[in-house]
Length: 380
Image (cartoon, rainbow, N blue to C red; front, side):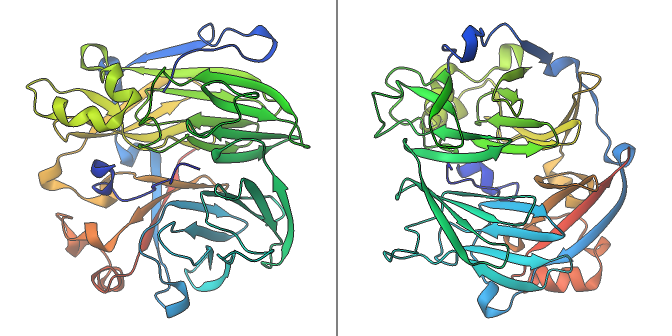
């Protein structure tokens, strides 16, 4: 996967595409839903959240990590990994108690060279993408090695959906006989190519600096592919076919294409008077809604929610001088009982304007370098 940084709000600050041919000749620009940001309705977390709960992740020695690159909530467990460590995928129970780690890093026959992405199946199997080893390694729910599946391309993110494998394709070191600047590939269960979608811009040498090849997530009968800072989110079916593409239209504040193709170029725009907007975090598919964060070159931040049913966009501009994590959603994971999970990092908690509103045990945990999950129970 791109080193999928599911970090706290302010870690994001330090952190495309064009149309191409796709399956069955579908024009990728023919099924686009455009939602103007300026016409969005106001988003109030109290209108969509019925309850909030905290989970304190264990700080015992075996469970320590430096950052969270991805968080998954599934099968009554929490799974995460930190690409800066060699600890593999860490598993916690519903109360935050550490259970085990899966995936040993090394050069051995049943070791992985590094984790770029991971997914969890309905049966609890752990699938780990080893980008360096160009393979997907499968472990049982108990953490036992099962098999290694070779992949034909240099991939930075993946998801198994139905009978298909979806692979986000890194720009560099590609199998040119199979892909030419393509961004997303759909493959059969045996890794035979089914179809290719989208293209990188020509000469996009730094295209993998920001979230690398893109983020893939599944909920119900849909898969979403998104690659910040691109303003377009693509939704696929289990058959590997493109169903819809949602574009958040920032109008005159649209981030210049130069930056979309090379996020390192954003510094020159931050020095300008204009405020350009972009999607700064991977969009989270949560049932029939999408959640995400948008930012600007002037360090402004908005929460957004998009309803797939009503096709309505909702936004809330965050007052950074009065920032309070309980009043916003940092979309890190979705749980099947209609819960969106925010990750609160200890390094960010110091800027919360209302620390006294948290239970004392939560405050103590964060002040002692512990990570906290904030569970938002969504209203129907």
